[in-house]
Image (tube, rainbow, N blue to C red; front, side, top):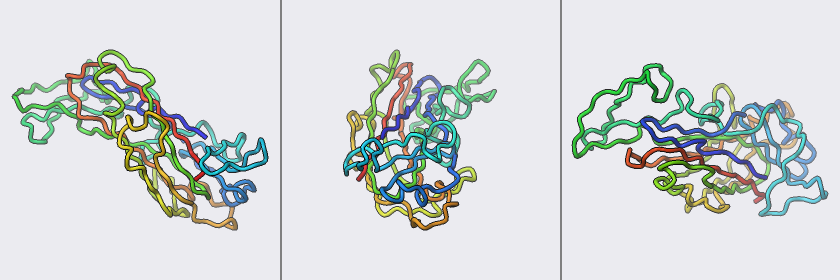
Length: 293
């Protein structure tokens, strides 16, 4: 099975850098991990974002067989906990959808000035509206340049997540590519410039959605050789983890899928760019594949 997310939607360099990722996702009302025949008999995974849920099976409905180890899981058509919309990334720590178009308020990565090269950042843009991006209503504070002055990001990390509940072990594979790029960024920024890291959070509370109360992580092993989007030029193994769900088949089916979920976190790190790279947009596409371990 494969999920495609755009990370980031658009990579625009001006005085503020805008980054986005598709998304938004609703907790299912009951746990099919404990009550659905195909999940309890063969194993399955429920991928969600707080709004919609996709179910992926070991059982192959078309043939009556099962997915062998090392092969993609099968998306179930008409699954019983679909919810609304499609499963996409959320902004880590919230169930807010990662932005689908840019610029959006609060979704920019602001450039600041390190006047003396000592690691202390000075903001020189006053977002007068505020809109989260530079426009005609904003004010630029005058600065004095010297040989040590550097332009850099106030925050150069973009963090997005999704949630997953499963009663099987499986691997995540990923592949990144450039969908579009324009102007100067066709040559000045490459996938290898965008750092990549993946991790898991076992339990928490994101905007009132409690997850992981009935989940466990036996092993979570990222591929240590994957450090940036350039390392994902071809389909690559990203992480392996064993059975995450800590409940039994006899659990009360009122247990919601999100209580049996963990959160998978991805962090994309932007390089410390300056105005010398010019202007333009870059749109990266990242495909995630979930394989039976």
